[in-house]
Length: 307
Image 1 (cartoon, rainbow, N blue to C red):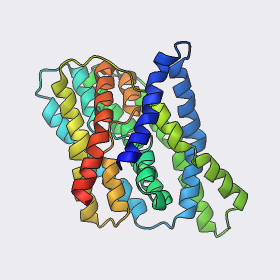
Image 2 (tube, rainbow, N blue to C red; image 1 turned 180 degrees about the vertical axis):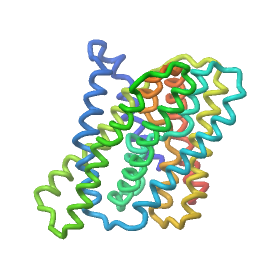
Image 3 (tube, rainbow, N blue to C red; image 1 turned 120 degrees about the vertical axis):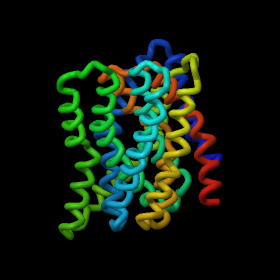
């Protein structure tokens, strides 16, 4: 695990340094372009290949359910802990969102595929199903909760969020793959090879884009940031483990989904916070802290829980 995380961390570090190494490069524009390509081309190709290659079972329902339970529990705990604190409402809202929604594909997928190379497609399915649960919840519940703390309701934001959920390329790739396999028609070899080639580029691009989205900032009043990070990195995987064990999720999906629960804050949360008027500066620092910390907490949790 150490070698895998060091390799992924190095790619993310290179991405985070690009804005300082190439001052003429519009890093944000480049990151958005990479993100658009991953979201609309590379990730759907990987999703299609995984669903067509790996037999589907009850885990197709269990994994999204477990991730949904984790998000709900972490949101409830964060609201309970942050409401009484003497923070601005916009900061509370940002840190509450940071406590619940994990980076299950941009970091989770590379980590799982690095840790389980012989089960690459199976753990990719875990990341995909975790994304199917996490992102729609972030775009709906996260937006609504964020607006309640911003004090500046913005017309049309929820409508846009639900439209984004309905048009998620990965979601439609799942629907297409399940429909194709249900039809009994074999998937042509050239199509599977094309999706394999496109899917193999996902890990490197995701980690580079993740690093490009991290910006180094001075840390003020670290305790609220550490509290939000502790909920996301420590409480979330324990909730996932309890929920997954309760509903009978089996290996290798059990270990993989617990590690997905241990992922740091989803970068989409930053976009949502900006749209609804939360404290994006504090959120950006929180994301930087828990992303860096996750490279320590993930192997420690994996060793403690699974030996």
